[in-house]
Image 1: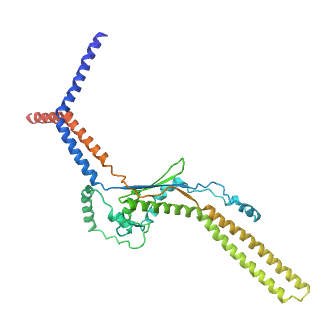
Image 2: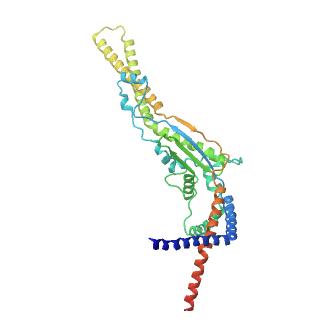
Image 3: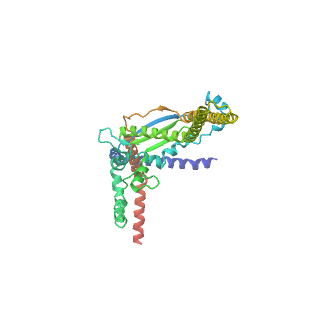
Length: 372
């Protein structure tokens, strides 16, 4: 056991000497590390102030979750009297709040925002959102440098390609132009929606380079989403209402016509007492009674259809409304500065500890190969 202990002690001593040697290398090159850190801080400041400010506005909605059963209150008794099964009017809600993010990210939803008039906080002339996104949004200076070769190549290829016609009419979501497709992609990156699966609270967030535009667009996105869901949920009920209204109008016309025929016949044959007169009177009276029964039943169905539309219209509770932000959400200049300083210091330390030795050994190996 003793020889093993004796063998392990030199190894620990060598390891301690190596750590001290590494610390000495770092201490000797401390000026270099400081210079690199200062250069990293300067680069961090340049990067932080080159990235445009972005403002994020978030709203939260608590949508009404409809169950499988429909409660029509006192109208259920009226429906039973009319012979209508209220249970058959119930339908499951296929538009779950979990689908709201997909609706917001869809191309038709984005194209509906193209004509929204936006005005920045400086009070400039209002412009459509499509023009603002394609012309007014700023990007860092290095984006133009990186994109310059691709733009030049695209310009060169455009010389041999037919020019794309300008889209002056309404936007067609089925067939977007290249410019409109870029606007949709930019909006999809700046507009986000999420759903809390426990509380089913829907969060909508919009990020723009102007705080007023961000708040305005967030409120518009919230209203458009509510309109989409309301249109879906009431679409079936509205179709049923239109169909019931047509039946009611038809039954009402037949009843008024039967009533008018009966009244005219009674006025013309008031003094007659023949059997044929009484038979015709009973027939017209029965037609009028049958028409009235149908008219009365369709009137009740019409009231139920109107109540169904009202009952199907969802209600949204705005938990957190849109407000104009006072501070930008990004970029975080402090985090960029700290990150650049850390990376520069780490790069300087790696160069002092390993880079010099690796370059020196590589240079010696190359000289030996050349001498051979």
